[in-house]
Image 1 (spheres, helix red, strand yellow):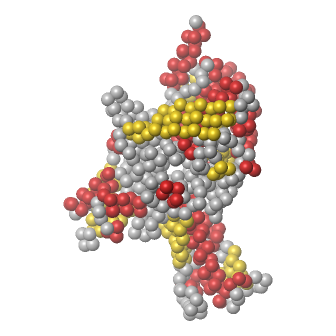
Image 2 (cartoon, helix red, strand yellow; image 1 turned 60 degrees about the horizontal axis):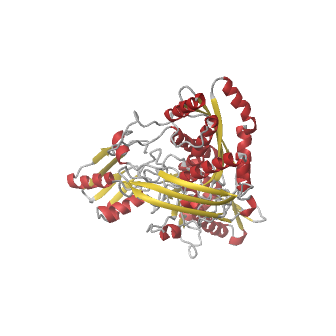
Length: 594
């Protein structure tokens, strides 16, 4: 569900017949295209879409919602600004929901615990009608991840999308990859218990080796890099896995049930190669654009087609400029979210902003540096090949001749001494980047829980996340993204559920009925990273926005099942509410009494 109230407003400038729509969209240019070309049939130059940094999107703000078109149409009819704000229940009833699968899966193993084949049949709820990415989420973003981190040679996946009487089901943080990871990691834990092989050992026996990359999976994707053993080992040490039985015994002395669960995962993000989405019928390229505009004083404005929804892009993208051009952070301005200012871009989702949008910026900065070196070569009477550039200083190799970034920037705009016959004035470049492949973050999440037997209440007491997100630009932002994703994953595993009655009425349409995780539901989350670089983008980054929500749900449920092992529990469906667990415990007591 969307966690903030939706607000949309539109205005018509009667002097120019131009419309301005203020919305919370994750991709303002796409909304302008869809609404202008296909809904209201307005010329794009007459329609401006402004999407501020609203603090969260999580996939549910990708779509072109009807209210965006309605307020724009109404503003034109009454020639006055029109504003619409959803109340909480309206959002529950109209915003796309996420994750509704019924799956049957079988895993074949040889006597040594090596995985031989996986067979999966999934019914995926689409809701009452199709939303934007409805069918692609349970197919291309789910079924293609069913290899996980394992060398399973044969995978059969059958997905049937079905219409029901619920709200449309579409992308939510992770979109398909959490569903695949949950299925796999629960299945691996069940296999471990039934074969008697240790949960860690069965994973190690089946991991894709670090020296096997690039690794072609049997379900279309080719992973470019990873080291799943390293993240597992780091996670086990950080979580104190070896000492867990001591903690279990101590909890038992207090009358509590304690369990520990693990999840090792991989995801496909950095969405997406245009050729791939085009082959799926998307009729869109998912490239990204970056414009670097150097001002005469040397300060820099970055115009990016991606968008910030609380991820800290203004900081991370500015750091790229500082690192490459040597410009102080305070002199870098990041502009996004306004179709009147930025070039056409595809927005933020699928952990693509740095891997795709940042890569476009790098390509644009390479163009800037090349032109700036030519200017510097002219000023220092040297060949371009002899001019070196490093963090704001141009130097003729082997000499003490230098020019500063500011000097070159001013020369570009005040060209009284300038190779005008070779170069146009100015220092302003644009570049596009279309990824060659998805990026593949992976890692290990470990959850420790305690259960109060008398009430069935689950408390998450420890959570450890070790993730490989490629090159880390800003460790603090990565940590925050992982912690936020883990919070949502814990909410999904233990608390959150959209409940309907027999007539199709949504019963959980307010926060009085829909249980959101609160601060006291969450433990401190220990976050660490291990880096293997992405091999096909210039930054080596993989993406971190979704990993917390992908690795955490199976780790939580595996821990709950582990805590309930004495009651013969093999599996429990999400959310593992106190009522479910209380019934399991009491049924177990009755069986023991009989």
